[in-house]
Image (cartoon, rainbow, N blue to C red):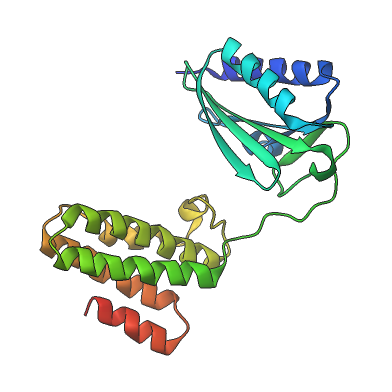
Amino acid sequence: MFSVSERDQVRRDLVSAAEADPRVIGAALTGSAAVGREDRWSDLDFALSVEGELDAVVADWTALMYARGAVSHLDVRHGSVLFRVFLTRSTLQVDLAFWPSAEFGATGPTFRLLFGEANEIPHAKQPDRGELVGLAWLYGLHVRSSIERGRGWQALYMINHLRDHVMSLRCLGEGVNAVQGRGLDDLRDPGEFAGTLVLSTHPDELRRAFHVLTGLLVGEINDSALAQAVRALSP
C-alpha cells in the first residue's frame, strides 16, 4: 500500500521532470490535490501541456513511470487528449494527461496551474438527462427479458447498470456531481437505493429489486406516457 509520503515524492519527481522537459510548456495539478481535498486514499493527477507531437512525449513519460514502479497502464482518450492511467507496485494510481498545448486548460474546478499558460476552454458538463433516462429504460427491458429467460446473472448485470443510471438521474435532480458516482454520498437520502441491492440470483429476489428500482426510475421521469411504460416493466 502506498504511503502519503511516497505519493508526495512521486508528485515532486513528476513536476521536476516536467520542468526539465522542453517539450512540456505547461503543467497542472488536477483532481482533489488541486483544491485541497486530498486524503489518504487520493490518487495522483497531473496534466501536461505538450508543444508539438504527443507520441514521443507519451513514450518517454511512460518509460519514466515504469522506471518508477509502474506495472500496468490504461489509456482513455477524450478527443486529442490522452489520459494514461498507471498502476504502481504500491497500488498508487497516477493519472497523466497529455494535452496539445492549444487545448490545455481547466475542464472543471479541480485544476491548479503550476507553470505555463492555460487556455480558456469549456468546462466538462454533467451527463445528459434524456440519455440517462433512455439508457435506464433500455436496461430495464433487458432486466425483464433476462429474468423471464432464467438468466439470473445477466439479469443481475443489467440491474446493476440500471441502478447506476437511476442514481445518476437522482444526482442531477439534486444538483450534485452525477459523474462516476462522485455525488452519491452527497444525496439527501442515498439509503433509499438500499432496496435495489440484489441478494441472490433467485428470480423472486431479482424481481423484488427490479420492482424497487423501476419505482425509483419512474420518480425521475417527467413524461407520463414513458413513466407508465416503465412502470409496466415490473408491475
